[in-house]
Length: 393
Image 1: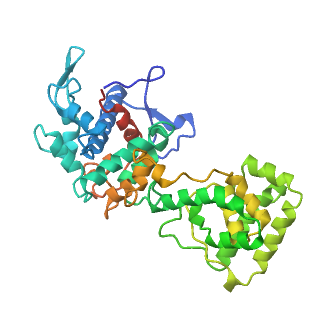
Image 2: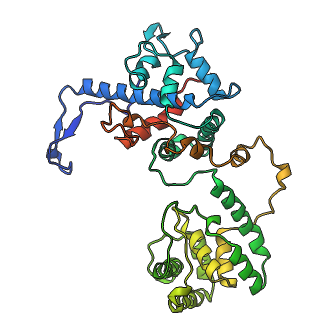
Image 3: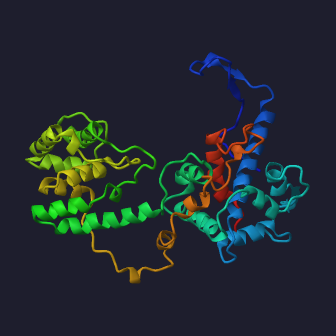
């Protein structure tokens, strides 16, 4: 186990009781800090190894790279064997078994990888193909332009935290959004009459541009009026209005170039204020979004006209029509994940709401023996490290 620092650690300090760390006098030297620091490194490595085992426990397809890594890692005599004691650079080193065994199968002498994997997934009701797909999804989302360092916190929540209420990349909503975004980039550009605009707006769903919030109350009555006014505020900020959302440069440039933009927004505002409360729409709550897209979607859906259509087009540039589905390759990971009966990670969570437990939720750290992590930040960093630390050919 090695930890690399930029520079040299010369001391470790902790907060004095009752202080906040705002002043130099709030800190005190930690006695015997080299030993404590090394213990922390060992604990962190245990956490990394724990997540490696949990992730590889999901691998059940003998043709997958993850399965091959699992076999290399756990087969004695393999060049990459690290499960039991092994030799590297002329020294005998402790294997991962000694690192994770006490957490997963306490009291068991020399547990097998299979025993630890079974313990890691205890209570998980997902079938093996779903587990495999969940692991493949993580590896797909955390490679290329979406490295684990950017996706790690989100992935930990989806794999390990039952209270997670956010979206999933390949659930039914993702398929709806993919189709909706394509329609906004194609069909929207073919509309010319007011009747066509109104018909398209009637079919438009907010879920085309943003994931809807699960189990959240929609905007009804005066709350709906306030939500629509917020959409107007977003665009009027370019003309000096106040808004709590951030506008992109492309939309700013577009609005400043439109002579009648402020007048059009003012007219929409007046309509929103004047509409009787019983005629206000029910607006679904949504997760985090790109404000330019979402607010334009609101204005076009409920107030379709050439101005709101053009405003929406700014965020959805014209596209070529989608290729026929018969030409899409089944080898395309996105197509494979979307073809499943829901997002693989979401399905692998099952009714209990998590795939496997976070390291700091294990009974030795959490007296309540509940699946919520006790030190989420520590778990995030360890989870990020795991896919990068697993043995590979």
